[in-house]
Image (cartoon, rainbow, N blue to C red):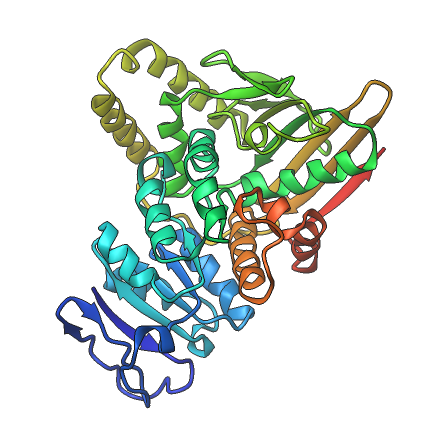
Length: 407
Protein backbone atom coordinates (compact mmCIF):
# COMPACT_ATOMS: atom_id res chain seq x y z
CA UNK A 1 0.00 0.00 0.00
CA UNK A 2 1.05 3.52 -0.70
CA UNK A 3 -0.51 6.76 0.38
CA UNK A 4 -0.39 10.43 1.19
CA UNK A 5 -2.60 12.71 3.23
CA UNK A 6 -4.12 16.14 2.76
CA UNK A 7 -5.59 17.99 5.70
CA UNK A 8 -7.26 20.81 3.81
CA UNK A 9 -5.11 23.58 5.31
CA UNK A 10 -1.57 23.75 3.95
CA UNK A 11 -2.42 23.85 0.26
CA UNK A 12 0.55 26.10 -0.71
CA UNK A 13 3.28 23.99 0.86
CA UNK A 14 5.26 21.42 -1.16
CA UNK A 15 3.67 18.03 -1.63
CA UNK A 16 5.07 15.34 0.63
CA UNK A 17 6.19 12.21 -1.15
CA UNK A 18 4.40 8.96 -0.36
CA UNK A 19 6.24 6.58 1.95
CA UNK A 20 6.21 2.80 2.15
CA UNK A 21 7.39 0.75 5.11
CA UNK A 22 7.05 -3.04 4.97
CA UNK A 23 3.95 -2.64 2.81
CA UNK A 24 2.09 -0.68 5.51
CA UNK A 25 0.95 2.86 4.77
CA UNK A 26 2.19 5.69 6.97
CA UNK A 27 -0.17 8.62 7.57
CA UNK A 28 2.22 11.48 6.84
CA UNK A 29 0.59 14.87 6.48
CA UNK A 30 1.96 18.36 6.78
CA UNK A 31 2.51 19.16 10.42
CA UNK A 32 1.61 15.67 11.67
CA UNK A 33 3.55 12.55 12.54
CA UNK A 34 2.87 8.98 11.52
CA UNK A 35 1.15 7.36 14.48
CA UNK A 36 -1.03 4.38 15.32
CA UNK A 37 -3.55 3.54 12.60
CA UNK A 38 -6.60 3.73 14.87
CA UNK A 39 -5.61 7.13 16.26
CA UNK A 40 -5.27 8.84 12.87
CA UNK A 41 -7.85 6.96 10.85
CA UNK A 42 -10.38 8.88 8.85
CA UNK A 43 -13.87 7.41 9.39
CA UNK A 44 -14.89 6.82 5.75
CA UNK A 45 -13.16 4.83 3.02
CA UNK A 46 -14.23 5.36 -0.60
CA UNK A 47 -13.08 2.24 -2.42
CA UNK A 48 -12.87 2.76 -6.17
CA UNK A 49 -12.33 6.48 -5.67
CA UNK A 50 -10.83 6.97 -9.12
CA UNK A 51 -14.25 6.53 -10.76
CA UNK A 52 -17.03 8.96 -11.65
CA UNK A 53 -19.16 8.09 -8.61
CA UNK A 54 -16.18 8.13 -6.26
CA UNK A 55 -15.46 11.74 -7.21
CA UNK A 56 -19.04 12.76 -6.45
CA UNK A 57 -19.03 10.96 -3.09
CA UNK A 58 -15.85 12.86 -2.19
CA UNK A 59 -17.51 16.11 -3.22
CA UNK A 60 -20.45 15.57 -0.88
CA UNK A 61 -18.32 14.20 1.98
CA UNK A 62 -16.43 17.48 1.80
CA UNK A 63 -19.77 19.33 2.18
CA UNK A 64 -20.51 17.22 5.26
CA UNK A 65 -17.02 18.03 6.63
CA UNK A 66 -16.38 14.30 6.87
CA UNK A 67 -12.75 13.15 6.59
CA UNK A 68 -12.23 10.26 4.18
CA UNK A 69 -9.72 7.94 2.57
CA UNK A 70 -9.81 7.73 -1.22
CA UNK A 71 -8.59 4.22 -2.03
CA UNK A 72 -8.02 2.34 -5.25
CA UNK A 73 -5.50 0.65 -7.49
CA UNK A 74 -3.76 3.79 -8.77
CA UNK A 75 -2.80 6.71 -6.53
CA UNK A 76 -2.01 8.82 -9.60
CA UNK A 77 -5.46 8.28 -11.10
CA UNK A 78 -7.17 8.98 -7.79
CA UNK A 79 -5.19 12.19 -7.38
CA UNK A 80 -6.22 13.24 -10.88
CA UNK A 81 -9.85 12.65 -9.97
CA UNK A 82 -9.62 14.39 -6.57
CA UNK A 83 -7.96 17.42 -8.17
CA UNK A 84 -11.21 18.02 -10.08
CA UNK A 85 -13.48 17.92 -7.02
CA UNK A 86 -14.82 21.46 -6.41
CA UNK A 87 -13.40 22.86 -3.16
CA UNK A 88 -11.18 19.83 -2.55
CA UNK A 89 -8.50 22.10 -1.06
CA UNK A 90 -10.65 22.41 2.08
CA UNK A 91 -11.30 18.67 2.46
CA UNK A 92 -9.60 16.39 4.98
CA UNK A 93 -8.69 13.32 2.97
CA UNK A 94 -5.98 10.83 2.17
CA UNK A 95 -5.17 8.92 -1.00
CA UNK A 96 -4.18 5.28 -0.63
CA UNK A 97 -3.10 2.92 -3.40
CA UNK A 98 -3.82 -0.76 -2.79
CA UNK A 99 -3.69 -3.88 -4.93
CA UNK A 100 -7.25 -4.99 -4.15
CA UNK A 101 -6.28 -8.16 -2.30
CA UNK A 102 -8.27 -9.22 0.75
CA UNK A 103 -5.34 -8.49 3.05
CA UNK A 104 -4.74 -5.04 1.59
CA UNK A 105 -8.43 -4.18 1.80
CA UNK A 106 -8.61 -5.21 5.44
CA UNK A 107 -5.52 -3.13 6.21
CA UNK A 108 -6.94 0.04 4.68
CA UNK A 109 -10.42 -0.49 6.17
CA UNK A 110 -9.11 -1.27 9.65
CA UNK A 111 -9.96 1.56 12.04
CA UNK A 112 -12.50 3.24 9.76
CA UNK A 113 -16.24 3.17 10.47
CA UNK A 114 -17.82 2.82 7.05
CA UNK A 115 -16.78 1.60 3.61
CA UNK A 116 -18.36 3.18 0.51
CA UNK A 117 -17.74 0.65 -2.25
CA UNK A 118 -18.02 1.94 -5.83
CA UNK A 119 -16.06 -0.82 -7.57
CA UNK A 120 -18.54 -2.70 -9.74
CA UNK A 121 -19.85 -4.80 -11.27
CA UNK A 122 -20.63 -6.01 -7.77
CA UNK A 123 -21.50 -9.56 -8.82
CA UNK A 124 -17.77 -9.81 -9.61
CA UNK A 125 -16.07 -7.42 -7.17
CA UNK A 126 -18.48 -7.16 -4.25
CA UNK A 127 -17.66 -10.33 -2.26
CA UNK A 128 -14.01 -9.58 -1.44
CA UNK A 129 -14.80 -5.97 -0.46
CA UNK A 130 -17.74 -6.79 1.81
CA UNK A 131 -15.72 -9.62 3.40
CA UNK A 132 -12.87 -7.21 4.11
CA UNK A 133 -15.29 -4.66 5.58
CA UNK A 134 -16.70 -7.32 7.91
CA UNK A 135 -13.24 -8.45 9.00
CA UNK A 136 -12.26 -4.83 9.69
CA UNK A 137 -15.54 -4.31 11.61
CA UNK A 138 -16.78 -1.58 9.27
CA UNK A 139 -20.31 -0.79 8.17
CA UNK A 140 -20.70 -1.43 4.45
CA UNK A 141 -22.59 0.53 1.77
CA UNK A 142 -22.28 0.38 -2.00
CA UNK A 143 -23.78 1.75 -5.21
CA UNK A 144 -24.59 -1.59 -6.85
CA UNK A 145 -28.15 -2.40 -7.83
CA UNK A 146 -27.69 -5.86 -9.36
CA UNK A 147 -30.41 -8.04 -7.86
CA UNK A 148 -28.15 -11.09 -7.86
CA UNK A 149 -25.69 -9.16 -5.67
CA UNK A 150 -28.43 -7.89 -3.36
CA UNK A 151 -29.67 -11.46 -2.88
CA UNK A 152 -26.13 -12.60 -2.08
CA UNK A 153 -25.69 -9.89 0.55
CA UNK A 154 -29.06 -10.72 2.12
CA UNK A 155 -28.48 -14.46 2.17
CA UNK A 156 -24.73 -14.74 2.82
CA UNK A 157 -23.72 -11.60 4.73
CA UNK A 158 -26.74 -10.24 6.59
CA UNK A 159 -26.48 -12.50 9.62
CA UNK A 160 -22.70 -12.06 9.83
CA UNK A 161 -22.98 -8.28 9.90
CA UNK A 162 -25.87 -8.43 12.40
CA UNK A 163 -23.79 -10.59 14.74
CA UNK A 164 -21.20 -7.80 14.90
CA UNK A 165 -23.71 -4.97 15.19
CA UNK A 166 -22.89 -3.71 11.71
CA UNK A 167 -24.93 -2.56 8.71
CA UNK A 168 -24.71 -3.98 5.19
CA UNK A 169 -26.63 -1.66 2.85
CA UNK A 170 -25.96 -2.31 -0.83
CA UNK A 171 -27.73 -0.24 -3.52
CA UNK A 172 -27.45 3.08 -1.69
CA UNK A 173 -27.73 4.87 -5.02
CA UNK A 174 -30.21 6.62 -7.29
CA UNK A 175 -31.46 3.58 -9.21
CA UNK A 176 -32.64 1.90 -6.02
CA UNK A 177 -32.73 4.06 -2.89
CA UNK A 178 -35.11 6.71 -4.24
CA UNK A 179 -37.81 4.25 -5.29
CA UNK A 180 -37.26 2.37 -2.02
CA UNK A 181 -38.12 5.54 -0.11
CA UNK A 182 -41.07 6.31 -2.39
CA UNK A 183 -42.41 2.76 -2.02
CA UNK A 184 -42.43 3.07 1.76
CA UNK A 185 -44.34 6.34 1.52
CA UNK A 186 -47.02 4.45 -0.41
CA UNK A 187 -47.05 1.52 2.01
CA UNK A 188 -47.48 3.70 5.10
CA UNK A 189 -50.27 5.73 3.48
CA UNK A 190 -52.78 2.94 2.75
CA UNK A 191 -53.46 -0.80 2.99
CA UNK A 192 -51.03 -1.55 0.16
CA UNK A 193 -49.89 -5.11 -0.56
CA UNK A 194 -48.73 -4.79 -4.19
CA UNK A 195 -46.03 -2.51 -5.60
CA UNK A 196 -44.87 -1.73 -9.12
CA UNK A 197 -41.84 0.52 -9.57
CA UNK A 198 -40.24 2.15 -12.59
CA UNK A 199 -36.93 4.03 -12.38
CA UNK A 200 -35.61 5.92 -15.41
CA UNK A 201 -33.02 8.56 -16.15
CA UNK A 202 -31.65 10.62 -18.99
CA UNK A 203 -27.88 10.74 -19.20
CA UNK A 204 -24.69 9.03 -20.23
CA UNK A 205 -23.93 5.83 -18.27
CA UNK A 206 -20.42 5.66 -16.86
CA UNK A 207 -17.93 2.94 -17.72
CA UNK A 208 -18.82 1.08 -14.51
CA UNK A 209 -22.57 1.41 -15.08
CA UNK A 210 -22.22 0.14 -18.63
CA UNK A 211 -20.21 -2.85 -17.46
CA UNK A 212 -22.96 -3.61 -14.93
CA UNK A 213 -25.78 -3.22 -17.49
CA UNK A 214 -24.15 -5.90 -19.62
CA UNK A 215 -22.98 -8.11 -16.74
CA UNK A 216 -26.52 -8.62 -15.40
CA UNK A 217 -27.64 -10.19 -18.68
CA UNK A 218 -26.22 -13.48 -17.41
CA UNK A 219 -28.07 -13.39 -14.07
CA UNK A 220 -31.62 -14.48 -13.24
CA UNK A 221 -34.06 -11.63 -12.61
CA UNK A 222 -36.94 -12.13 -10.19
CA UNK A 223 -40.11 -10.33 -9.20
CA UNK A 224 -42.08 -11.05 -6.03
CA UNK A 225 -45.42 -12.84 -6.05
CA UNK A 226 -47.02 -13.72 -2.71
CA UNK A 227 -43.61 -13.27 -1.05
CA UNK A 228 -41.96 -15.77 -3.38
CA UNK A 229 -39.46 -15.11 -6.14
CA UNK A 230 -40.74 -15.65 -9.68
CA UNK A 231 -38.44 -15.40 -12.69
CA UNK A 232 -38.96 -12.66 -15.25
CA UNK A 233 -39.11 -13.92 -18.87
CA UNK A 234 -35.66 -13.49 -20.36
CA UNK A 235 -34.97 -10.78 -22.94
CA UNK A 236 -38.41 -9.24 -22.48
CA UNK A 237 -39.25 -5.55 -22.90
CA UNK A 238 -42.06 -3.45 -21.50
CA UNK A 239 -43.70 -0.21 -22.59
CA UNK A 240 -44.39 2.02 -19.60
CA UNK A 241 -46.10 5.36 -19.15
CA UNK A 242 -44.43 7.86 -16.84
CA UNK A 243 -45.73 11.28 -15.76
CA UNK A 244 -44.25 14.24 -17.61
CA UNK A 245 -43.82 12.41 -20.92
CA UNK A 246 -46.39 11.99 -23.70
CA UNK A 247 -44.57 9.10 -25.39
CA UNK A 248 -44.31 5.72 -23.73
CA UNK A 249 -40.87 4.66 -22.49
CA UNK A 250 -39.14 1.32 -22.98
CA UNK A 251 -38.19 -0.41 -19.72
CA UNK A 252 -36.45 -3.68 -18.91
CA UNK A 253 -36.35 -5.92 -15.84
CA UNK A 254 -32.58 -5.26 -16.00
CA UNK A 255 -31.47 -7.97 -13.60
CA UNK A 256 -34.57 -7.66 -11.42
CA UNK A 257 -33.76 -4.61 -9.24
CA UNK A 258 -33.40 -4.88 -5.42
CA UNK A 259 -37.00 -4.14 -4.39
CA UNK A 260 -38.25 -7.76 -4.50
CA UNK A 261 -35.42 -8.71 -2.12
CA UNK A 262 -36.11 -5.81 0.25
CA UNK A 263 -39.82 -6.63 0.55
CA UNK A 264 -39.61 -10.42 0.46
CA UNK A 265 -40.27 -10.77 4.20
CA UNK A 266 -42.35 -7.64 4.62
CA UNK A 267 -45.46 -8.16 6.82
CA UNK A 268 -47.69 -6.08 4.53
CA UNK A 269 -46.27 -6.19 0.99
CA UNK A 270 -46.54 -9.49 -0.90
CA UNK A 271 -46.05 -8.58 -4.58
CA UNK A 272 -43.35 -6.42 -6.17
CA UNK A 273 -42.35 -5.83 -9.79
CA UNK A 274 -39.56 -3.39 -10.66
CA UNK A 275 -38.33 -2.16 -14.03
CA UNK A 276 -36.15 0.62 -15.33
CA UNK A 277 -34.02 2.10 -18.05
CA UNK A 278 -32.90 5.25 -19.82
CA UNK A 279 -35.23 7.99 -21.01
CA UNK A 280 -33.94 7.40 -24.53
CA UNK A 281 -35.90 4.85 -26.53
CA UNK A 282 -33.19 4.42 -29.16
CA UNK A 283 -30.61 3.45 -26.55
CA UNK A 284 -33.06 1.10 -24.84
CA UNK A 285 -33.91 -0.56 -28.17
CA UNK A 286 -30.21 -1.27 -28.53
CA UNK A 287 -29.92 -2.67 -25.01
CA UNK A 288 -32.96 -4.90 -25.56
CA UNK A 289 -31.52 -6.17 -28.87
CA UNK A 290 -28.19 -6.90 -27.18
CA UNK A 291 -29.91 -8.85 -24.40
CA UNK A 292 -31.73 -10.93 -27.01
CA UNK A 293 -28.45 -11.56 -28.84
CA UNK A 294 -26.85 -12.64 -25.55
CA UNK A 295 -29.58 -15.23 -24.98
CA UNK A 296 -29.17 -16.64 -28.48
CA UNK A 297 -25.40 -16.53 -28.97
CA UNK A 298 -23.53 -16.05 -25.69
CA UNK A 299 -25.48 -17.78 -22.93
CA UNK A 300 -24.60 -21.25 -24.31
CA UNK A 301 -20.88 -20.46 -23.78
CA UNK A 302 -18.93 -21.30 -20.58
CA UNK A 303 -19.34 -18.74 -17.78
CA UNK A 304 -15.84 -17.30 -18.09
CA UNK A 305 -16.32 -16.78 -21.81
CA UNK A 306 -19.70 -15.14 -21.17
CA UNK A 307 -18.11 -12.65 -18.76
CA UNK A 308 -15.29 -11.86 -21.17
CA UNK A 309 -17.59 -11.17 -24.11
CA UNK A 310 -19.98 -9.07 -22.03
CA UNK A 311 -17.08 -6.95 -20.74
CA UNK A 312 -15.80 -6.46 -24.28
CA UNK A 313 -19.24 -5.44 -25.52
CA UNK A 314 -19.65 -2.96 -22.66
CA UNK A 315 -16.21 -1.43 -23.26
CA UNK A 316 -17.08 -0.93 -26.92
CA UNK A 317 -20.16 1.06 -25.87
CA UNK A 318 -18.56 3.19 -23.13
CA UNK A 319 -14.81 3.12 -22.53
CA UNK A 320 -14.31 6.53 -20.96
CA UNK A 321 -15.60 8.96 -18.36
CA UNK A 322 -18.67 11.03 -19.29
CA UNK A 323 -18.73 14.79 -18.66
CA UNK A 324 -20.18 16.26 -15.49
CA UNK A 325 -23.96 16.09 -15.48
CA UNK A 326 -26.03 19.00 -16.77
CA UNK A 327 -28.88 19.24 -14.30
CA UNK A 328 -31.18 20.96 -16.81
CA UNK A 329 -30.86 18.06 -19.22
CA UNK A 330 -30.16 14.83 -17.36
CA UNK A 331 -33.40 14.31 -15.51
CA UNK A 332 -34.70 11.34 -13.53
CA UNK A 333 -38.06 9.91 -12.59
CA UNK A 334 -39.20 7.25 -10.15
CA UNK A 335 -42.79 6.02 -10.27
CA UNK A 336 -44.17 3.74 -7.57
CA UNK A 337 -47.74 2.48 -7.80
CA UNK A 338 -49.26 0.68 -4.82
CA UNK A 339 -52.46 -1.36 -4.73
CA UNK A 340 -54.47 -3.09 -2.09
CA UNK A 341 -57.87 -4.72 -2.35
CA UNK A 342 -59.59 -1.33 -2.06
CA UNK A 343 -56.71 1.14 -1.67
CA UNK A 344 -54.38 2.87 -4.11
CA UNK A 345 -51.33 5.08 -3.76
CA UNK A 346 -48.86 6.53 -6.23
CA UNK A 347 -45.61 8.34 -5.51
CA UNK A 348 -43.71 10.08 -8.29
CA UNK A 349 -40.23 11.47 -7.66
CA UNK A 350 -39.11 14.02 -10.25
CA UNK A 351 -35.37 14.58 -10.15
CA UNK A 352 -32.20 15.45 -11.97
CA UNK A 353 -28.59 14.25 -12.04
CA UNK A 354 -28.73 10.54 -11.21
CA UNK A 355 -25.01 10.32 -10.42
CA UNK A 356 -25.11 13.41 -8.24
CA UNK A 357 -28.00 11.82 -6.37
CA UNK A 358 -25.85 8.73 -5.86
CA UNK A 359 -22.91 10.76 -4.56
CA UNK A 360 -25.16 12.62 -2.13
CA UNK A 361 -26.88 9.44 -0.91
CA UNK A 362 -23.54 7.76 -0.20
CA UNK A 363 -22.20 10.78 1.70
CA UNK A 364 -25.48 11.21 3.61
CA UNK A 365 -25.47 7.54 4.56
CA UNK A 366 -21.84 7.60 5.70
CA UNK A 367 -22.43 10.76 7.74
CA UNK A 368 -25.54 9.19 9.28
CA UNK A 369 -23.64 6.05 10.28
CA UNK A 370 -20.82 8.06 11.88
CA UNK A 371 -23.12 10.21 13.98
CA UNK A 372 -26.11 7.97 14.74
CA UNK A 373 -26.70 4.50 16.10
CA UNK A 374 -27.96 2.22 13.31
CA UNK A 375 -31.74 1.91 12.97
CA UNK A 376 -31.10 -1.69 12.00
CA UNK A 377 -28.12 -4.02 11.86
CA UNK A 378 -27.32 -6.68 9.30
CA UNK A 379 -28.75 -6.49 5.79
CA UNK A 380 -31.05 -3.53 5.18
CA UNK A 381 -32.43 -1.40 2.40
CA UNK A 382 -31.37 2.27 2.35
CA UNK A 383 -34.79 3.38 3.59
CA UNK A 384 -34.74 0.82 6.42
CA UNK A 385 -31.25 1.91 7.44
CA UNK A 386 -31.52 5.69 7.10
CA UNK A 387 -35.25 6.49 6.90
CA UNK A 388 -37.39 6.94 3.80
CA UNK A 389 -38.47 10.47 4.65
CA UNK A 390 -34.89 11.41 5.49
CA UNK A 391 -33.67 10.16 2.10
CA UNK A 392 -36.31 12.12 0.21
CA UNK A 393 -35.70 15.20 2.36
CA UNK A 394 -31.94 15.34 1.79
CA UNK A 395 -32.40 15.00 -1.96
CA UNK A 396 -34.96 17.81 -1.97
CA UNK A 397 -32.79 20.03 0.23
CA UNK A 398 -30.01 19.76 -2.35
CA UNK A 399 -32.37 20.51 -5.24
CA UNK A 400 -31.98 17.06 -6.80
CA UNK A 401 -35.51 15.66 -6.53
CA UNK A 402 -39.02 16.20 -5.23
CA UNK A 403 -41.61 13.56 -4.34
CA UNK A 404 -45.37 13.80 -4.94
CA UNK A 405 -47.71 11.34 -3.23
CA UNK A 406 -51.29 10.70 -4.39
CA UNK A 407 -53.59 8.41 -2.41
